[in-house]
Amino acid sequence: MPNSTAPQTFDLLIVGGGVNGAGIARDAAGRGLSVMLVEQDDLAGHTSSASTKLIHGGLRYLEYGEFRLVREALIERERLLGMAPHIIRPLRFVLPQSQSPRPAWLVRLGLFLYDHLGARGKLPGTESVDLSRSPLGSGLKPDPGRAFVYSDCWVDDSRLVVLNAMDAAARGARILTRTRLASARAEGNHWLATLEQDGQERQIRARTLINAAGPWVKDVLHRLGKDNSDRGLRLVKGSHVVLPRLYPGEHAFMLQNPDRRIVFAIPYEDEFTLVGTTDEAWEGPPAKAEISAGEIRYLCDTVNRYFDRRVTSADIAWSYAGIRPLYEDHARNASAVTRDYVLDLEANGNRPPVLSIFGGKITTYRKLAEHAMEQLSGLFPEMGGAWTAGAVLPGGDFPDADFERFLSDLTARYPLMPALLLHRIARAYGTKATAWLGPARVPGDLGRDFGGGLHECEAEYLVREEWARTAEDILLRRSKLGLHVPRETSDLLDAWLAEQGSQCP
View 1 (cartoon, rainbow, N blue to C red):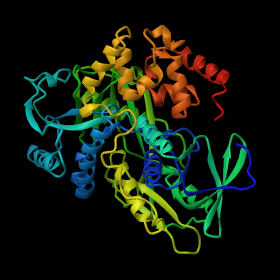
View 2 (view 1 turned 90 degrees about the vertical axis):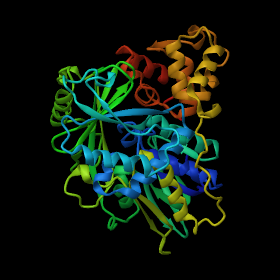
View 3 (view 1 turned 180 degrees about the vertical axis):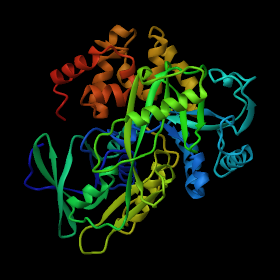
View 4 (view 1 turned 120 degrees about the vertical axis):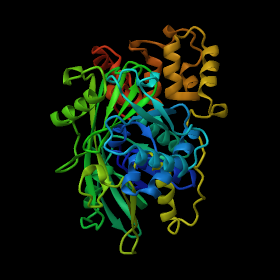
């Protein structure tokens, strides 16, 4: 990244390449503002890829009186399903009552509110089932009793971030990964920011700085010479385990524990079940998180409380953990901390404006971005109006958001490609799949197979269009193939990336 004698000037410098930063970059670029986004690691490299992978209203937040948040999230759930029908899909959740610490009438009341607080045009409502007679009870311990069944959505969280960044870039935003904000100082009515990338520095100027650094939001404020923000940040670690399939079917379970916390069990990558999450206070500065022995025990105990198949830590195929940067509302326990967001705009005239993001959740990222732009409207009177509601994300532009019809059309276009490969590609890329499938007829036309159906053409596309730089970027975030490929794939892929010179943008 060469130095420039005349720093380039942007309207917005966004620090943080998680879902909030990428969503704001997309919204701002679409309104005609010049935008640079910098991320110190990979897009969605931390919190935004460590979620439970749900687009949901947050049923349990009703218990804490978060009615506004739940309503907003339910409305967004429907919007996002229409905007990205390739990476978001409906999912039915089974809520057994046999071990519930809450009375059935209270749960039913909550589900009634959940069905009616926000728009629900595409998803079916709640029903009650007898699990001893329903196939939904398969895999559970004997005599599972009655359950409620309700709707939410599954999302490929890291791809959601990347698609927002892609759309932002298509609208003129500059996206820089592996780039750290080293410092920034006021220079007149602009920020003069020093960026570090690959051991080199460059400077840019920005009219406003957006601090969307998630767990590092306070660190960024320190680099700006402001360490006394009156906004609180509470870091909470959430961990998940991936186990071999616990039950048949494509439904999920919402499991209630005696401590009143809930754990989800969700079908994952065909062969597995994703189980999470925990809520554990994170002490100390933010860093890469790992699951603890206590969290493993808690999740395995939850599984063993409900399912026929007994599991231990030896059964875990993979685990991941992330730090959630929650707004400090001084709740007694981590599970009760609000998932709402707070936008803190400092624009007092003493220095250029800074907008810091505290809290938030994946489901409400688009609305958060819209609210952020409302906060900045007085600073940028020239910018356009709100536009993202209903505007499809890259690859989601197939007719009537009908994924099955799109997959059928893709299969007809590539009849000699394996069905499983086409299904994965359709889910990950939507209509963008043809950008790298091109004229290929059989898998051999896609170049070298690194394992698990990951071919050279796909890897080249991910480097060229999606900022992938390492095997981890490709195997764990751009795809979920890390669970399916042989061990040597990661080394082969990193060696290939080095040969291609892809580790330098």
